[in-house]
Image 1 (cartoon, helix red, strand yellow):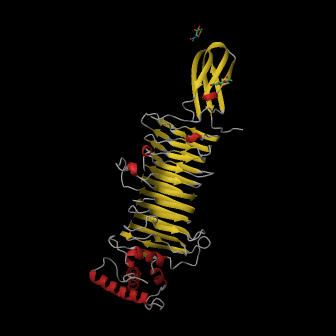
Image 2 (cartoon, protein in one colour; image 1 turned 180 degrees about the vertical axis):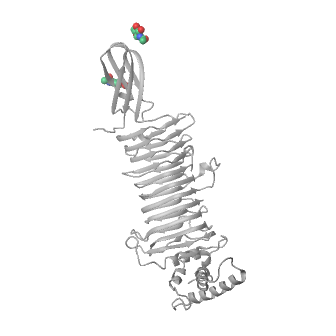
Length: 482
Ligand SMILES: *[C@@H]1O[C@H](CO)[C@@H](O)[C@H](O)[C@H]1NC(C)=O
Ligand SMILES: *[C@@H]1O[C@H](CO)[C@@H](O)[C@H](O)[C@H]1NC(C)=O
């Protein structure tokens, strides 16, 4: 069932092909189009094109390359040709759904992953319009891949269901039926009714250059599936550029990931209680800028709650007055990132596990009120008991309290006892795995010995009084521990 003007694009495409052929066949036409000649050709072409399209199965009469007609059947479905209202005044749900259905209606013979038909690069084009929708846009249950929706704005109506998303990829069963679906160049306004986009049990999905706002649940939900790539996108509940008077009330999650193997790249999250929630493994975050809700208001930039294994990398990102929380992390890497406005990393104990963590080569900047760059959250008396391979090192800190798992210190004394206290800098209390020291004395050769490393305090004693400097390197990372 095609709406009234669904053929007009196809006609135009056909005209372009036919027009080229006509010019070629006549051989005599070149240079600037004169109105008369051009109009004449256009009328002729449209006549022939429309004849050809209406009689698809008959052989075209006057042209030598009939394959051109097949290619003139565009696989780009323009929603305005399905009766969608690009002004956003009337409801376009049905028209958009029809365009999607039609795009899924002509798969190629080939397949992507087993069971997923190749839709051949077909597109639903939003024609730069804004469309009001009252129900989620769904892809057909039959599935498919190599398909794109792009180029316009979607706006939830006032009666849009509050527990859904404007665009939903939702495989009907646990088997994957969508692969290589691209959602691109979209502005999505959830109108404070539910979420923006949900990707459930889908394979290799791209969300690119999307601006998602006014959600109440989450901007993007990724659940199950594999390899959803979100890039170059802006996500926020309330549109603001920081310091907004509503900030303490910001709620919802910018990107909610319950799955593995996803990548979030070059994304700004400017309003949400939690910027990115991670429940799954092998996800990577690069170039993410979180200023979604300040820690002081109870917000979190990236919250990692992956039971068992964390296996998360956060690279080259920007935490702007809001930080990172990781529960019982096992394999977590944070590097090349900038933490501004006292933003810090909290390692939270549920079962007392902290293993395989590298927090290196970051910059931290604060207001000199004594906030540590890495914080151990052992509230409710759940102390860290399984600590292995924790490397917090080589971070640059201004106006915050430096924390590290590797430290160096020196002290001069004239006597028999030298003490270097690392308790202010070492991350874990009362834990030194390895010490190396040198006692530098120019006047004599005393006997000396390492006495004590308890409470992160290194004590060296000599047999006779001597004026000497003690140099110490301590390590609580257990790197290279046997
Ligand atoms: C170290 O202490 C001894 C005894 O108190 C004193 O004689 C000596 O001058 C001191 N040396 C230095 C470098 O202060
Ligand atoms: C090491 O220092 C702690 C106090 O910091 C003390 O309780 C302990 O007895 C010391 N151990 C030795 C061997 O001196």
